[in-house]
Length: 371
Image 1 (tube, rainbow, N blue to C red):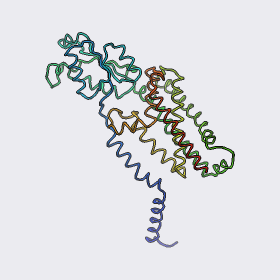
Image 2: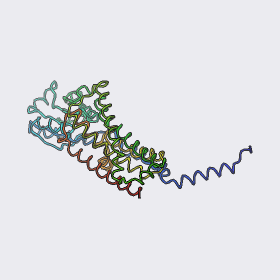
Image 3: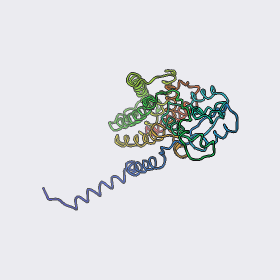
Image 4: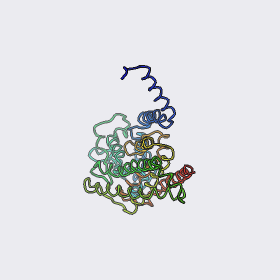
């Protein structure tokens, strides 16, 4: 064996660099994944809770109550989208997910402001979302009495001025927030990756060429490939629900039929995305890379980990396109708030539209590859 040769080493390095340059997808991943992570973590991810949709129930109807609402608005934690007169209306909006919190201002506000032993107002929050619980803790330290007196500095008598009521998760147990969202995260990761890799593996093993010679249409081939994975996705959903109930006591307060309907639409959307990815790549490794490339923004921007309301507007616009964002809202609403599909129809409609468009594009791509 000859000794070490720098010339031969450089030749191998040049060969690998040329191969990487010709492999456009891998080259894009080398640049794209670090760039995407930098933008997501450095720009789009913000742990500050801002502009949560909220309702204010002003039962006092006085200048003091309006001033209190304005002071809370200036904190930028809440954005009052609804001004109500009855607490029951706020309860309905909370169940539907239209608002995340409700500020209940009592009729005897002025008396409460002058009595340091009484709560000034009540803050009812959607406890199914940890982000909202964090916002409630911020408002719990709000210097209510000091600000109403025109003093901008917080004082000790303001710390306990707010009564916080957490709906749907009064004990503030973390599994109640994370387990429903984990259904979507697990389905996203497995459905997209498994489908993309399975179809690419068919092509690598030559099975796809065999299928081309059969009378199968592109729609029949696509649906035939998707249906088994739909069953797998529903089994995964069932496993998470059973384990969540047995181990973490996570309830399903809504309809199981509604939950499985939402899961079915989401699974179809994820599978369509996986089929689309399979038409763009040539190897199983590339399919895995592309699946991870689509998984990261969904996990980070969907509201599963970081507060959705803390993201800048462009990041929120992108998140609204991603199916996981809408499924997490659906599954939390059904499981924890007992909401129905009628209450959550905008989220279900968004999933149906994404699934339909993605499946249509995937079928066209498969047809093009078959031709």
